[in-house]
Image (cartoon, rainbow, N blue to C red; front, side, top):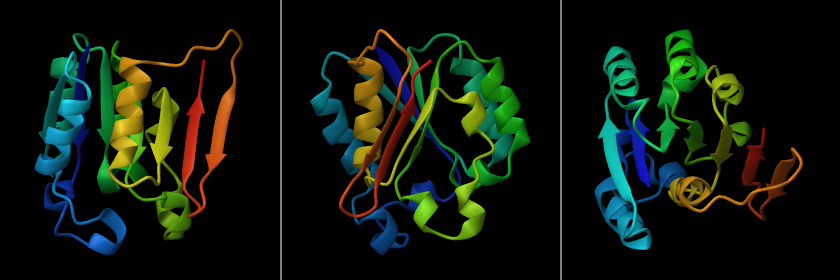
Length: 163
């Protein structure tokens, strides 16, 4: 399996930026751990603070990977361009968020890109990426379409619409 994590603006500061929300682990450290968990898969990583560069990367890899894990950062709530781009890809995209965006400021509760994504996983810290990777590398399959909604003790959510 070939998977890529594509992070948006300010996520290059993980481990330093608002550790009470995003944790104190850097993405480099977490990626090493994630890759060790899935030794038979290729897990690539890309981050940019620039919307156009994120679109270019999605178009470059959106027809050759098995899955894209997409944390658009603040562009989640504003970018019609990313929505249109994701809709044009063949590779499935899963939206991921480190924090529970529904438990934060009101403007963060709406995702512009969600309608184009296969599903959304949020609120489990960096483990949101691990859960998303698992859903691509070793998916659970169902014979009928369902929605899984799990509320964790800290108001964390796992929401995966299956089509």
